[in-house]
Length: 219
Length: 194
Image 1 (spheres, rainbow over the protein chains, first blue to last red):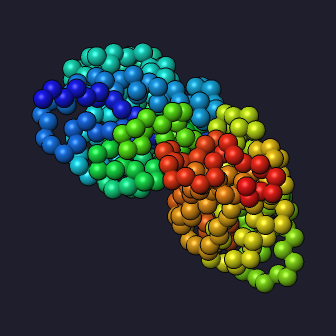
Image 2 (image 1 turned 45 degrees about the horizontal axis):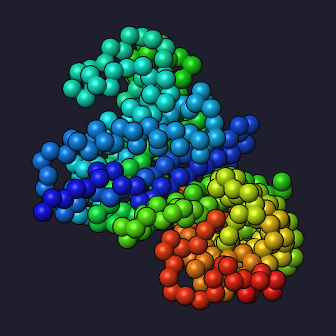
Image 3 (image 1 turned 135 degrees about the vertical axis):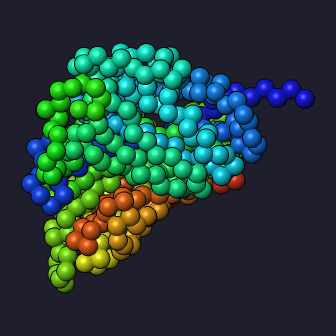
């Protein structure tokens, strides 16, 4: 029997946008806006061990871009206002953690490219490092992530850090992402998150965004 | 805006495939929530006027945010619902003051018409409490394809002195409705029931 299965089958899309005005301190002139998008897919590898899952990573690239654009549109802010990002995955119980790892490249690089990163995704996929040349571009830093296997309604805390310098202390953050009722056992939830600024009353010092100087994705 | 708002959350849930069948067009539900200070937290107050006024403001604000998030004309809205979670230092009646006296009219203005009672739920809870917002067709409560509910939850709300207020607007019913009953096409939409 020949089984022809499309690798990418979108079942559901869940967007979340929040505006934080204060946390019992001074009300921010411009609220911090954070957003997440969760795309619920059929897991084509559910229920069995498949050694070569890389074709799915390739197939996910366009979806990563689409979801990054959709998230920005849902947040209704220009690209220039995005200062932090993160990504994640929740794998349904008939899958394995490694299926969630398929999202690292398509999800992460899609957001970085949306924000103006001009690197070489193909080189990265071959395991080659990037030439972080000190250009003051955007999307220089690694997109932090979490992933887990869970049942329907599992909550995932998605870490977020500054898009150009991971060590910017005011931007260390996390956003809870949860799609009620998902994932079912044969589903995957892939998540992207973006934010427009620092934590609302950030005041514990450290590297400031204004002081980024090395442009190496760290400082 | 007299409400002191800490946070506003807007979520959109789109279903494209259900039980391996395409849902065309996808069903879409929008949820807008506000986390507000409870001006009466910790004490008994007879007249809950401030909360009544806040309910009126939030009906417009949150209803409008749902319609905007769905990207639809107001007249394309199909069902609605509302809910509130009162923090530990409040009482259930605080939720009632927000939801029932004055929230309806501005919410209905955001979705046009709205002959039907807006279904609602309320509870008291701590941070991360989930409340299921009941939904029904906005012009005819008996439309069976539109009986539904949407989960509402904010991880860090409500604090003891806060209230979470939630409104849901949809542009559709359930994804694969097939259990009969009053159909959208057959509603008169005058008495709010049929």
